[in-house]
Length: 212
Image 1 (cartoon, rainbow, N blue to C red):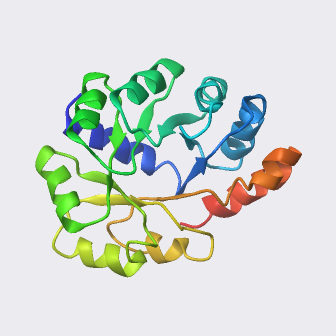
Image 2 (cartoon, rainbow, N blue to C red):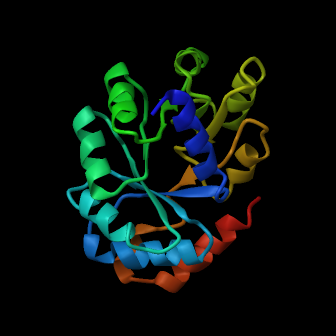
C-alpha cells in the first residue's frame, strides 16, 4: 500500500463521523457491547489503543460488530503493526511516525494515520505521500489555533486532532478547513464502561455524531 493509497483510505474512515472514539480497554469481555453502543450511536470508526494487555482481544471482538470499522492506536513498532493486522484492525494510528513504522504499515497494507505535532513533521510525512495525518497532542501542541496556523502554508494536509479534545472544544477543531474529524475518549468514560452503561455511552455517541 502506498502512502497515497493509505491517505485516501484514512480520509474515508475519518469522514464516517465527526468523532473517532479513542478507547483504552482493560476488559475484552466488554469490548463487543461497547462497540455496539458506539456504532449504533453513530460513531462507526473505533480506535483501540494498544496500551493494555486486552487490546488485541478487544480488536478481535469489536471486529465482529456489523457497521464498525475497527483500528489500532498507539502503533509504535513493526511488531505492533503485524499484531494489529492479525487481530483484524482495518487501520492504524500512531502518536508520531518513524521510517520503520511507516515501512511496516505500507508492507502490511494497513492504512496509517501518522502523528505530527509540528510543521516540519507534517512536511516530512507529506513529502512521503501522507496527506491525511493525526495532529497530536492537539491541545498540548497549541490547540485549534496551532492547527489553523499549520493549515495556512500546508492546506493540502488534512488532520484528525487527538489529545485533549473534548465535547467542549471539539467544534473549535471541526470548524477548521484542514480538520476531517477529531479523536476523543470522552464518548466512552471509564466509569460507564466498567458499569456496562451502554445506553449512556450510546447517548454520548449520538451527541458526538451530531457535532458536524
